[in-house]
Image (cartoon, rainbow, N blue to C red):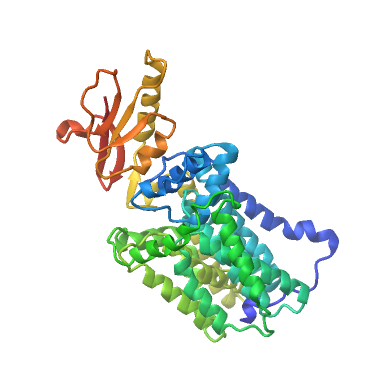
Length: 485
């Protein structure tokens, strides 16, 4: 491994200063939680999120397998398993559906703390700041999506490769090998993004060979497989999750053929608008370290991530693939900048140091603003995780259905029909999940003498449909509406 990624930080910290030494990482961890956890239910679940949430909720209620009812299965077996467990313990809801990714997105800050001896104090703190406030990571952490679960697990794997490169203590090496095995198994079950991050990680293992052989055996493969199985089955309590591991590979292949991604220009505008700090510092760090052994691997990793933005099913999740090489190089660049500033003894040398520090400060301000922008829910400013989003009218529909049911002069709830010719609509299914009489029909049933019923059906087309009914889906400037009668 590169010396910049494996160097020691100097003499051991005296016991009395341990709390002070670890304080910056704790502050970054707290900031990561504050950016990710508040108001997770501010926006309704998109169709991609509702697929996993609804099936996991039905499973937690003991309603049996419901995945065959959907055109697309949940994309993440790990998220499906975690949601099933959370729904069983604390109940359903938009907040709970997004809780696991939010916690995983905040936990990635611990990687910087684990690497503090290898990167050095300045670089590791810089990495902690970047991981805590990464705007697009904050955005994906606040969604019921498995992308951040994969990203966090792969960060742990990459950190393990860095540590194992020169760790001399057998006991520490054994712990890290087990940790990498567990993280790899978790990543395998966490969603399609693992197939994007897998190739550069495999190349890193093959090219950046450690100075000491890593004693990987059958036990570690079993440990990885057991982890994937446990998380996909919610601790062996359900068996609908394991088939989703292979389904994620199919979802990944579809991203290369289906034209459902956001436009390329819009994607890069989002990356440049939110991630200019790690992009600039990361590329600068790679250029400055071009002679080091790991630089070609990190550069190849970055090229691979850029190629992912060219496929038809592109999404901002491509940034989660770019982030590891760029952020590690950016952290090294910050350490180099600190050295430059401290050693700028003459006025001539102080000028470039001051300019570099000023530019970095401006980029940091943009970076922090982007984090708060996405955390505050102002997605219209540039963060579009899905081509189709859910309008807030779906919540009003669910409230009105419940209000009509409670006011009905019957001993039981009225029959509820949802007209969906294409099959089960995951968004409507999620928000109407509390209705025990719900039926999915291709067309409304004829009037029946048995009594009244409620019908949710697409709103009539025409000028009046622009304002009538309930807005359910937003596709660009078009809002798809339904009506209740």
